[in-house]
Image 1 (cartoon, rainbow, N blue to C red):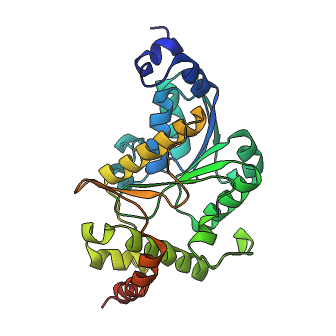
Image 2 (image 1 turned 60 degrees about the vertical axis):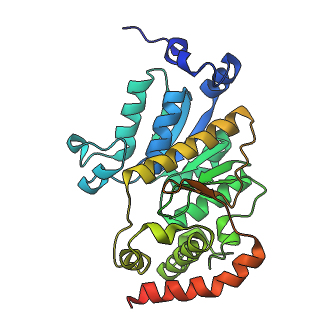
Image 3 (image 1 turned 30 degrees about the vertical axis):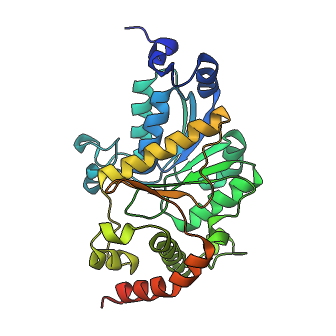
Length: 291
C-alpha cells in the first residue's frame, strides 16, 4: 500500500489544522535517550507527524527494559536502542528523516541544538544532562524534561530560564561537565530527590525502603510502564505546543501528575517550601542511611 503523509495524519485534523500539521512536518526535534520516557515521546511525536528527528542513545536493549520501554521487545534484546527506535519510526512514517547518533552525540551537540530548537531529554546521565542544558541555552533551544519521580512529571526549560543545576543547587556550577565527579552526581541526584519530595506526594506512592536504596546508589531506579509512558506523552504534548508556538503553561519548575487521586501537583510557594525543607532533608538522610 502506498504511503501518503496527509492520509497518515488525517485523524489529527480537529486537534490541529493543516497549517499546523505542516509545521509539525517541517519541525526537527532532538530526542536524547530513546529508551523509557524519551522513547515514548519519540513514538508519540512520530505518530503525530513530526517529520525530522535527531536521536541519540549509547545503550543496547536489556531484558529489564521490556517492562516499560515502547521500542523494547524480546527479539530486540542486545540491539542498539537508537537503531531500533529509528527503524520503528520509519515503519510509522516512511518519509520521516532521522539522524541516529551514538556516543558521539556529546561532541556534535552544539550543531544539533542549532538545528533542533526543541529538545527532549530522555536520559539519566547527570553530567551529560548538564552539558545538554548549557548547550541548549547557548543555541536558544528549549529542553523538555522530567524529574526522577514516581509520579509522571514534565518540565519545560526555555533559553532564558535557569538551568536545573542552578535552580536545584547542584554542586556543578562552573565545572566542566566532563570533570563532574561521582560525588557531584550523587549530590545532584539527592538535590533532585529533595525537590520531588518537597513539591509532590511521590513518597506516598512507592516503597520508601526501596526508594532509599535507589537514592543511596545501592539499587537501580524503579520504573513502571504507566508512569514512564505517561511522562513521555506529557513531553510530547509540550514538544507539539512549542513547535506550534502555543504556550502550554508549563515552566522550568514543572509539575507532577498524580493518577492515584487524580490531581495535578504544582510547586509549593517559597515560604512553605522553606519551612518543610529541613524535614525533607532529614527524611532523605534517614532513607539513604538504611535506618
